[in-house]
Image (cartoon, rainbow over the protein chains, first blue to last red):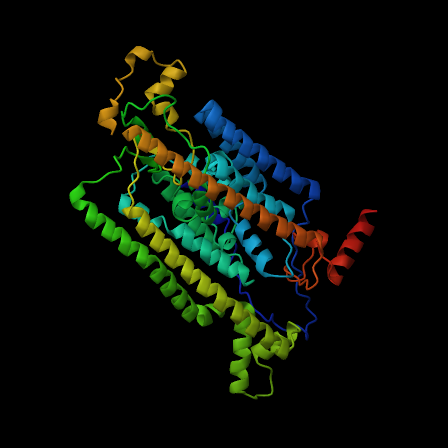
Length: 437
Length: 80
């Protein structure tokens, strides 16, 4: 609460932002020049990449070899200090997909090598070892993990519903980045104001809400908003290794289920159903599979319809719109309109502006069609996944949802025996294979 | 018999998972290589991405725009 109060105190003072700026030609007043921090030395940028690579390697070793929650905890403290408070949340992997999208769709933008590395390295690791990046290297996750006081269980229906938001936010961010409109994932990041101890009032309010939520809901940003988490989730589904709670066999004591604050533990399931309901289940799955392309087509159509209003969020398109509106109904009072003045000050030729706006509108149409189709695909696949049955013989963390935080290891009696904290004689009897099946 | 069938299913799932994994890895490598090549090969239609503010810009090192060239020249002269 003190942190939230202090953050509000650091909020930037309200000031009227005007474009074009006021004319001070009569008084010869010089508007102050915007100053920005100097470029970070190149070797320091490579140092960031080296720290990231070392952090990822250490996280994998701690999760799979040492099975150490304490190690992961100290690694996350380091990551929070370095990537969070020292580097102030930039460069970060969460915003990197936007740079990649802009680099792919904009011929004049070159993505820095460090950003390519920050985008690719955690994903490569996730393809082999799951979400090791989330476990102890991501400063956003580390901060939320430290704030967790009393985790509450999120109902399954809400978890499933909110679980598609990161995919939608990812599509939204990539749409805006690919059209050169902006980087909304960075702009509306609710954690970065905490690292920078500064920010606009809206973001500080979002940061305060996130901090409050993180005290009672395990990693709310990671689970229900993080767009990079969506990419890591997809990669983790195909990972070579996975986190296993027990080092030996599962006695199904359910202790691990209660130790996971993120609802990632899945209980044993036979994977088979009664012959009576088999026909109904198969028919439902068939209909859902038919529904997926319908949802994609519907989403793409709806996205195309929204392209024109959405494109007005781009400043170039908005200026062109205002210029066209002014041309359609010219008001001649002997003074320049704000639109004409802004065009003159921005040194933009009206013809070039209109051509640029028309090109941007075309790009927006394509991006919105793809974004709409993406939402349809995400919703469709979510519905299909809910009707699929997976066979599990033991309590296992969900591949995509598990942050590999290592909390569940110490909850397992088998693990306690392995590290010598409990005599083997106190172990509960193993569940017979017949009972498991 | 049942165990054999379970093993077969597990192997099939692992095979498919491996296929998806290496396809994604290849895609990731291709995107990274494409962007790195674009960066190294120079940009014919280069446009400013930071409102003509070179100080603090992440791409100033490889930027070939006149303003960036003069900025780099000025900063090098100041350093030497």
